[in-house]
Length: 289
Image (cartoon, rainbow, N blue to C red; front, side, top):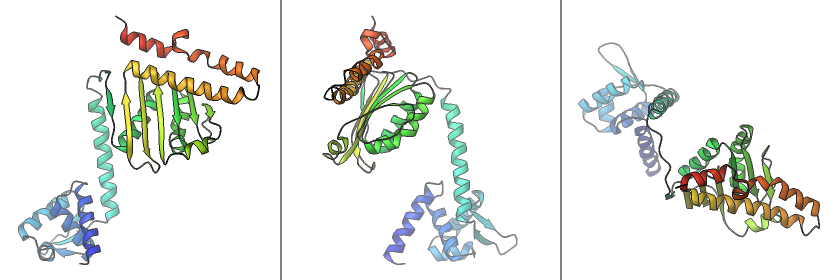
């Protein structure tokens, strides 16, 4: 077996093991898949494993639906099509996830805390952001660089459809139906000054997330989340005032006083302390003595 083939073989056995196969079961299944139907004894000789162990692996694969065995004295092993094996594994996984979800729902809800958590896994960062958007009930404010804006656009539109107010600052023109979009002038020039992608979210003043990822969304450079009412208030205020200022910086130089007044009127309800909105209510309830 060539070095490249050996590397591919090892990768396949490793991935099959993640489907619930033992190492030996993975080797037996791949041998049958590559070399065709065979007896358990021949398979053992082909992969250099003990016959008794291979017979046990064949039985295990048969129970998993990955190997079919002929009826009769001379039992011939046949590898089930890999498409069938993957479909079956996917179905089992979905069933397990569904059952686990129902069981976990029975546990007491986690209590919010005041800590700041560093996230180092890209999937964890993106999942955290998705859950924040999906669970928001009142308002989402965000700053999204182009890659992030495209990635979260549909989820933000779904939030709007649920009645959530969504206000987003972006650096390239993008359509997010129902959301209030603030487009940074010369945003592409600003964004080009860095070689990464970043985003900030604050949902209902209850949870905040700020993250810097590589431009391809593969690796996390830095990411932090928190449900601290103080940190969320600071994040919320920072974002809304940044959105308002960005809009005003475009209207003021143009001498558009009417537009300036419109911006101030449309955002008056966002100020947490003067209007005592939902964000303020959350902040006050957390620290009320």
